[in-house]
Image (cartoon, rainbow, N blue to C red; front, side, top):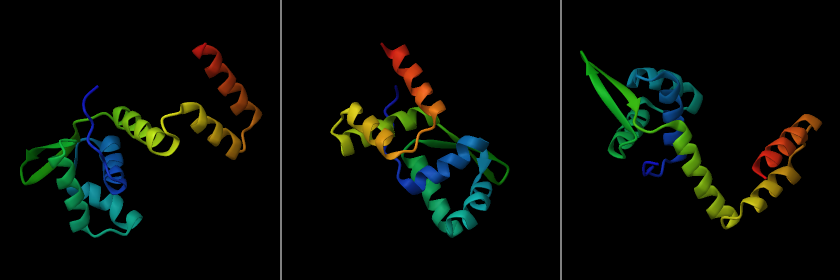
Length: 123
């Protein structure tokens, strides 16, 4: 897997828009985040610039517009973030994390059956 740089929570919001609508312009990202996040356009452009510097995003110039596209897959970023969370919060112990979520969540019978199937496949 490619070395995935650390992405901040705010940068994640930008990436979600771009992953779902790639390639897209900065204006498109701004339109999608400005009211949702109560951010100014300059803030969003700064986040985009940071992601380009981190080599998570790249762009193509089309006329006067920059169209941004991801250089990393959403799935790879999720895996990396999950590993980081697991080590940071649960000292890398997957069982502790899973137990925490299962004990704190209201699971339906269907959820429980799905979890059983997943665990059976892992045996």
